[in-house]
Amino acid sequence: MTYEQLSNFSNTWGLVFLIIMFATAIAYAFWPSNKKKFEEAAQLPFEEGDRQS
Image (cartoon, rainbow, N blue to C red; front, side, top):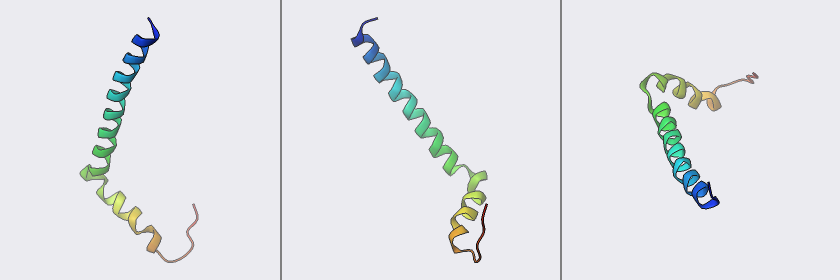
């Protein structure tokens, strides 16, 4: 396998991998069962008191 073939292979499959990862992240963010978790996390800066984890 030459450098040119390897470069073409990695460019193609790297792009496919990144598109799949992006679609997975978007699906996770907009999945209905995650809505409550994200709403609670969005309100954390407005809670009173010092909560340390």
